[in-house]
Amino acid sequence: MAIIKTSKTVLEGNRARSTKARSLDSTASRAYLQSTQTMASLLGQRIRITRLRRRWSETEAAERARIARATLQKIERGEPSVAIGLVLELCSVVGLGLFGSGSPAETADQLDRARLELLALPRRIRARPSQPVDDDF
Image 1: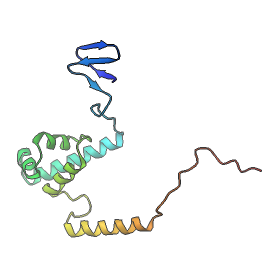
Image 2 (image 1 turned 45 degrees about the vertical axis):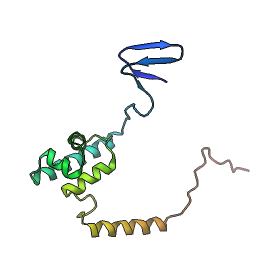
Image 3 (image 1 turned 180 degrees about the vertical axis):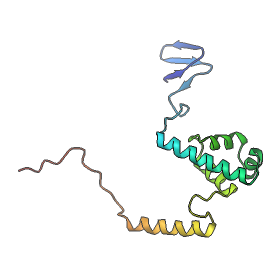
Image 4 (image 1 turned 90 degrees about the horizontal axis):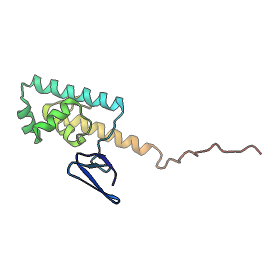
C-alpha cells in the first residue's frame, strides 16, 4: 500500500499505519484534462444561471433534485468528480436542456436517432498495429 499523504505514519516492515493516510487506490484524486474542467465549469455555470432564473435557493434546488446541498455546490463549481447521474438529474430538475429543448419527446427522438446511427456503424473495429507493417519484399 503506497502512501501519498500522511499526518502520522508508522512504518512497520512493508506496512504503513496512519490516522489520515490516503492510498493510491480509489481514494486518490484524479487529474482531469483542462478541456474537461472547462466543460464541467461551463455546465455548472449554466445550471446555476438556470436555477437563479427560477429564483430557487441552493437548498430548494438540492431538495427538488434529491441531492445534498454540498453536491449541488460542487456541480455548480464545475467539479468533474460528481457522478454524471446527479448532474443530469439536476439539469432535468432546473429545466436545463442539454440536448435541444430538453422536452421528453425531443430527447426520446434524439435517442432513437443515436441508436440508429450506432446500428449503421461497424460492429468490430480492429486495433491498429503498433508497428508499421513491413510489406517491402
